Every structure is written in C-alpha cells, then in structure tokens.
Image 1 (cartoon, one colour):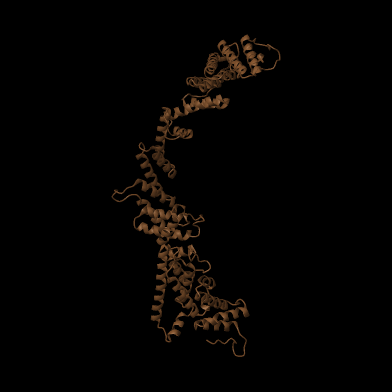
Image 2: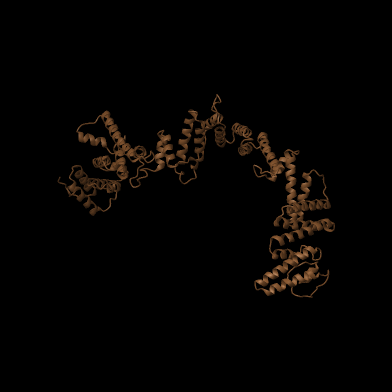
Length: 611
C-alpha cells in the first residue's frame, strides 16, 4: 500500500493525517507501514495533546503489540475508555485477537490481563447503543444494509460466544462469582467497571462492584455463598471491620433479602440469623422486615403439632428476635417465659444451666418474679451446701445473700451464712488489729442472730473475745505448727481485748505458748524455739517448763555453733541460757547497760535485763 506522507494538497503533514494513514494501513494489513508512521508521529508531534489523538495512537500501539504476541504490552497500551474515538476496525481486530488468545489451549484461563482487554473491547463493540459504530463497520464490509433483526441476532450471538468462553475459563480456574470473569463481563456491559491497569488475579473489577452487581441481578445468594467461602464465620461480619467495611451495605441487603426468602420457606432460625448479620453490617429493619422478625420469633423452635419443639433452638431464636427488636414487649415476654420454663425443667439435673437460664431471664425482664424465684432457690441450695461443709455450685456473694434476706426475712440459711461470715470477718479484723472493723462485724452478726439492739461496747467486746477464743481453740485442734502459732496469736489478741478480766484467757494463752514451744522443740530447730522466745510471748519465771525449754534450745544451739567453729556464738548462747536459768527480778537490769546478746524487747519485762 502506498501511503501519502505529505499531508493534504499544499499543506503540512498533520497528526491527524498520520493517524489516519496508520489506521488505513493497519486495516489494509500493510503492517510494515504502520510502525514507521507511528514513529514519525511521535518524532514530529511528541505525546498526543488531544484525547482523540491519544486514544487512536494507544489503540494502534496495542494492536501492533498484540500482532506479535506481546499481550502484556497490548494490555498496558490499550485505554479502557474513549474507545469510540479509535478506528472501529482496529478495535475489532484487537478484540478478535484477544478472544482467540483466551480460547487457545495452555493456561489462558489465568491470563487476567488479556481477559480484561477482551471484556473491555467486546463490551464496547456490542453495546446496545453502538457507540463505536460496529454495525456501520459490518455494513461497510458486507456491502449491504444490516436489518435490525439480523443485527440484534448477530449481537446476541457474539455476546453469547464471549459469555460462554469466559464461563468455561472461570470453571477451569475455579473462580467464584466474585472473582469470575463472567461477572466482570456483565458489570462492564452495565457500568464500564473494568480498569485494564488495575486488573489482577484476585478479580478484574473491585469486589464491591461485583457484589453490588450480583445483588442487583437477584443473585444475592450466590454472592453470600462466595463471600462465606472466603470468610467462613459470619459472626465476624461487622460494618466496622476492615475486612468487611467495603461490602457491608451490599452484604446486608443480600442477607435481608435471603432472610425474607427463608421466612417464606419457614426456616425461622436461618431467617433470624440473616437479619441479625445484616444488622451488624449496618442494615436498618424496614416495616416488612420487622413483621418478618416477629413472625419468625413466634414460630422458631416449634411446630403446630408440637412434635418438633426444640427448647434450645427456640431460646436461641427468641434471643435473636429480641436483639433485633428489643423494644417489642411480646418477644421479651416470650423469651423470659421460655427461659424460666427451661430453667425449672433442669433445676436438679443441670443446676448450672438452670441458673444461667434464670439469670438471663432477669436480664431480659428485670421484674420477672418467676425468674427471681428460680435464682433464689439456687442460692438457698448453695447456702445449705456451704453450711453443711460442702462445696456450693457457685461462689456465694454476700450482697446476693443480703438481697435474698430482704426478699425473704425468714430465710434461716441466709441469716446463718451471713452470721458466720461476719463472725469470721470479726476474727480476721481483730487478728489484724482493726478493732473498729471487728466490732462492726460483731454488731452485724448479732443483728443476723436476732439479738435486738442497741449493742453496748462492753457486750460487743465480750462477744468478740469469745469469737476469737473459739477460733483459737479450733486452730489448736489442728495440731500443726501453723495452727499452734495462730492459736498463740489469737489468744494474745483476746487477752488484749479482755483487759483486766483476762485471767482465764491468759492462762489459756500461756498454756498455748508452752505447747507451741514444746512442739517446736520436738519438730523444729533450736533457733525456732529461740525465735519464739524473742517474740516475748511470755515473761520468764511465769512457766518453769517454758523457761527450761528455751534454756535447752540455747544450749543445743551453742553446741552446734561450737561444732561449726563459732565459739563466740556458742558463748553468747550459753550466757543467755545461764541468765534465763538464774531467774530475773521484776525491776532493774541485772548486768547494767550491757550489750543485748539475745535481742529481746519488752517494755514491761525483766527479761530485758538479760541483754
């Protein structure tokens, strides 16, 4: 083909003329001329400065790249919009080549770039408005008019061929409807969504565009199936999640539509689940949706005959319905009644589940008397177990017991448990030196015991002393070192509380100190006995047995120190033993202000004279 490069008669060569000549050369299969013309265009005019020239130049470059099999370059060069500005014949040749490329054997089902190119070009050529003049091209090549019927038939035939090929490639590659090339093909024909520069193996169009298209075509279930395969846990689908934010509104619409469909099929639980997931994705229930939720809530978990009644399924469904319509009193009442009914049913066989049922019923309906009664029954049973020395089913909270007592003032287990708890608290506070807290606990204990106030300070102290002494005797009965040490501490506290009236208690205290010393002598080291002595629990001279036990401990330790090469320590221990054995006066220092060898401290004891 001879091409005139000189431009119009008497005029200079223009960019438009060069592009015209290049298009004619390409359509005339004179491909050896096309590239020089485009090179001259670039050399003389640089980058195209108009959209028309840019599109025509880019399509020609893409077509040349495709002719030599460089499809990545063809995809990169071809624009995805403004194709009506390019020569229709060149666009058609490039489109046919792309479709042939995809239909070749050998892995073309994954060539997403070529697929995107074919989709963009064929969607342009087969657009029902024919923006590129494809019908005119056919008329020109046919040499005769193309009737409307024939044009529509041919157009439908070509659309079908493209669709069938893309679907086959999707099946071969295992793509779901969200990533399917067929979906991208449908969307491109509707809204021109494919961007050649952004197409990739994850999809030729944005996920949200594919999802929105599927819903608009009544294929919401296909969307949900594909999305669930990608994200198997719908419980995590929320509008605020980065993984689901983009498609939240479309998914919500699809779920609501499927929920209505499941309702019509009487799949009550499934319908409520769909509405719940839709709500998490930001969906607002309409009037029809609210009616659907109410109907599902009234029917979930049961049938007209009662044969398919499932309490677990019914409670679950009512929970879903109540969460969707929290302001609806009928659903709240239905849920509460079912929870109480099932709580009563498993009261003895499954106490934990029973308790949970009653507790949930009170959350739904805080004033429900049956639910409160059920929980109170469980608490009474726990109190009886605890008072009998057994392990309660649940940890007992004092506030819950006090609430029970306010509702049932005659509940003896509650009174006894609170009384015992306050008795233990009084002893613990007294042992820790907090007498104010100890006396307060005693007053509460007396109140729960039925003793009428007011409670005088002397009476309260006497009761407190009795409680401490009882606890001390209980600890001593254990027979262990820890128990004996606690006994000494508690009886010492009781002596301090009793004051001048502590004679009997002091005797018991001194006997406990002696018992601890002898226990340590038999089971522990001499140093343990000496440490007890240095805590000054009893003055020397009060108990000869105690003094002798301490002396023996000092002498044993002296022998041990001597054997270990510590003569100074041995000497000090023997001196201490001698001083204890010699007996001490009540006043004055026996040896003057000498250094304290043993380290005891007692403001009112002659034992300080030892040191």
